[in-house]
Length: 218
Image (cartoon, rainbow, N blue to C red; front, side, top):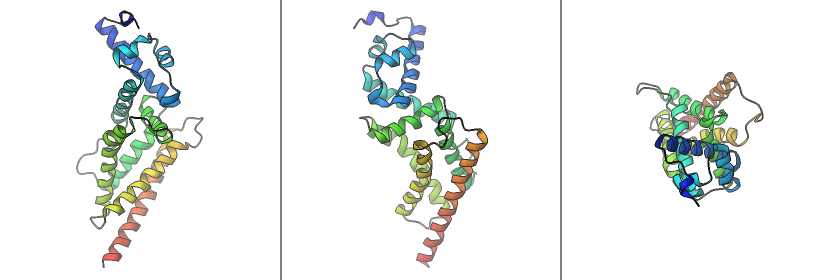
């Protein structure tokens, strides 16, 4: 491999590296890790195939950078706290969390790459699966569990909180794996309707768990 073919100008180098990273994010999200090739990624990025080795090392190291990049873009574009302050109600926080996830799922652009990568990870886990679960998924789940714990007003067990969190995430996961009308764009009003439905449905279930918990302790 002729590394002299890789860009050496700093500005050009940074641009090429970013193009490869963004192209890899799109290709991996569409085809999954196994079926994506370095040649396809570099063609998509208009970069020499030596670029991956030069900037990232190999395919697995590129993928490691891709999911981190995709997760960062998702967080910046659709943050799960929606910029709420500390005075926001737990109901508002739950809505913001669901809204962020649903918007990511229906995003056609880079902000949606992470959710599509996760759908691929569920179907065909890669060696990065453990790191993704620990560094990206766990903090988001802990945030959701914190919201639910507050909604349950302390009248809960860890298992009840986790089951409620799984029920919320499960509705979003269904959308990610089985997007209704996945061959067409959803309007902002349709995405909002889905967000409101999931939030209302989840709040009703959480209230029921809370009432049952109070009954069990009375």
